Image (cartoon, rainbow over all chains, first blue to last red; front, side):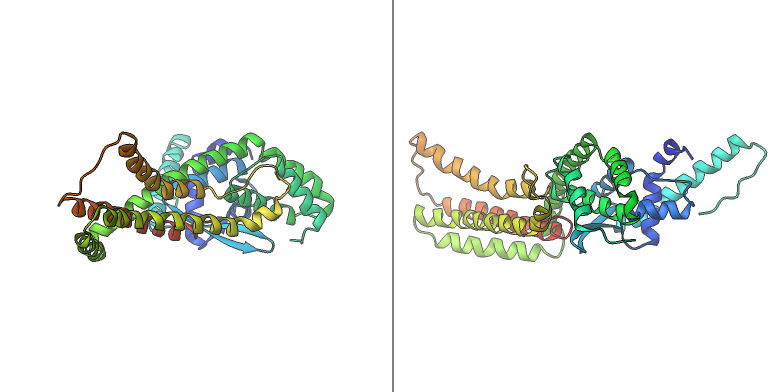
Length: 115
Length: 227
């Protein structure tokens, strides 16, 4: 499914939501979780993922932790207190957007979406 | 998921070598991504998958990622130190700040000569220099595992947080050097006055609070960076 432009705008929300449900995750794990949840329909590209993670970290919404795994170092991301607060507002924003899109696409349909 | 063998790991390292990444944090993250991704595929698909990863993590992409990361780390260190400094005056920690101030004022008032004032002013600067040596040693220790993996890479690998913190260790020392040598160069003789101990106490106190805040920043960032 070629939907990278659609995903781009929601990437931060996706990351925040995943980290709300999973205490801490690393970059590759996030891409695999999205792939698994959407049965491969949505694929987060590495080109978009790491800049988004670093941006959220710089904004203070994510914090990181370095851990030794096998013979390498792994960087885990988790939500900060500000990040936890931001999740609900980002989700509400996305939900409102999807509902408005539904109104445009199907004017007769009353959307009932829930996150 | 399978374990990669030594020659496969070597191939991954060779692929990442060419990207010439100097930030230990970015390098570790990209290396972990490569290994985690390739572990999910059977060995016969290794070369194709490695090629695909190389197409995603291009030289330009890695350098843009590194440069933005370095910039955000630098800004974050500045903001964190400022927050820590503010906390000395805005929270219950003001008692510590007041205590330090009182002790230094007491010590400064005991000073009878310019030399004694000089020693008082120099003490936090000497501590900053010692701290910077310890900091450099700690960075070397922490980046050793990633350096060992990429030891054949020509460019030096260091933590993105190490340069901004090192600069902060040296800044007061360099400023002090200017303040000490500038009057000497212009042959200005500063007389010992009644105000000298007070001024020295204020400067020493500011330097000590600056040093303590920097130590806290180091402690906080050591969890997220190779420092």
